[in-house]
Figure 1 (tube, rainbow, N blue to C red):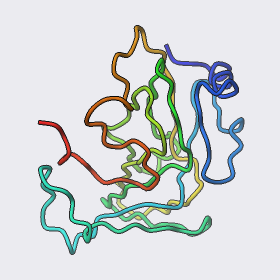
Figure 2: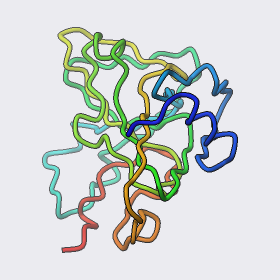
Figure 3: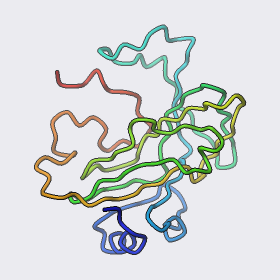
Length: 191
């Protein structure tokens, strides 16, 4: 069952669900009837294609093939057709043991043909910190993205039953406590 705006506000006020901003944030203006909007922070990473001939899931991504960029608030990043970036949210989140978060891009963003999280849209109980967004421009023209723009939303659902091993306790959880956008760590999977 998806939580209502009233229930989201209750959880935030009781600190059962924690959302903190890295910058200015009026959380009440970000709550919709059944979701909570998140914004882009000013930091993202992109793959430098000239330094990259292959992404091998069994090997760590070479550090010289990924660049970390920080923008000023009003400075746009021009996302070109079929360009892919990893961008981090302005908000840090701590999800309690009895909830999961479903992440969806806002329809206003999709109408620009910007694809976010085409697969990684589910956040486990007790995940903590910022969220790395996988963003691709599938439009035929470049699209400007700005730090602080509302780009996606969380819907929260209660879990039925008790979680035995939450994300923070699970061996092999690779993305806890991230501040910057993080590239794939699939090479760290436990086989």
